[in-house]
Image (cartoon, rainbow, N blue to C red; front, top):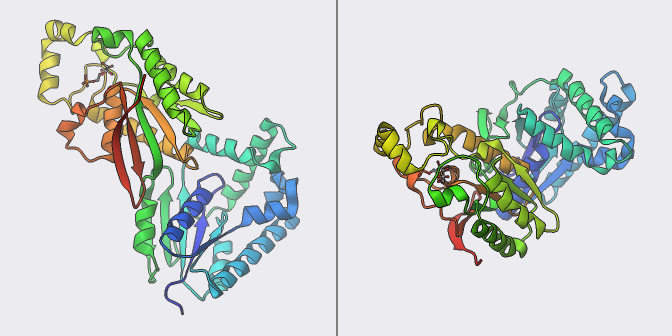
Length: 405
Ligand code: F6P
């Protein structure tokens, strides 16, 4: 047995990020000099059946014809993958749902020349699933259906697979991956799996090729040193947004994530206007720290009217929680979720922008750059500069850059 060849078998319900992980894994291993091929059952099915397989009934386990065709496709791809490893390939990824035990036993029974690593993608976040389904129904296979019909058909398809779903448990080598959080939920490695260290590390890495982290432009509240609220941009703030827009005009930015506050959306709008194709996605997870009973007050007012708040915050700014509001530590979870969602939703993009707020951006920066907790609430987040962040398995970069007004 050649000890450097490997089959990877993806497992999971439709729209759980399997193909994205397969593609990224291929890109990553190829960069590392490991020749990798993907054998995708969906692609083969679409080539063979065209729009026929967009009907959910095609996936009904009771539909003999559909089941036989899907089986044939699976066997064909197994053969192709084995051929590939028999020749010049080193890693063959079988990309399909493979949710039933029967199917997986068949794979394990048929391909015995090299070890198999199963990777199960799990993701139960309804908002992310909805976004995943939107991407699926945009494929040409659904072009003859209305959007609503396509979504219903896809949801029904998921239900058919759900009925057969047997999570990984008895396989010799497997990883169960929370594909939104890049978190390994369970792993079992019995055989010697080539490239395992690299693969495992890759699976848990938050990857972003180019993240431009911007703070919204100047607001009326900023001028008065007032915190929170939902103040719009000043004239200067609008000019800053336009400066950012012309700066990023030279780059392709398909998606800008903002908070749900006016000031971040107003900063994003001119940037979008100078892009060919760009969507603004507001996420509540990126809303500024909720300062509770201190919302809309100036720091001076807080100091004089609520000295206990100022003092307690000064003593431990990271852990302090505003009465009826939040603190840095307590908003960490939601900001992290926002980052995960943004990276997941833009996973095929080369460059993305997040327009956030002072405290939120500090938390985003600390996600990529280690800082002691007590220093996080003081990270420098100016309005006339932005951070460029690159985070891949092989490269970490964080640069503060100016732009011209
Ligand atoms: O002043 C702008 C602002 O974004 C406020 O809305 C927010 O409360 C504050 O900055 C966060 O900074 P700090 O934690 O240093 O008070």
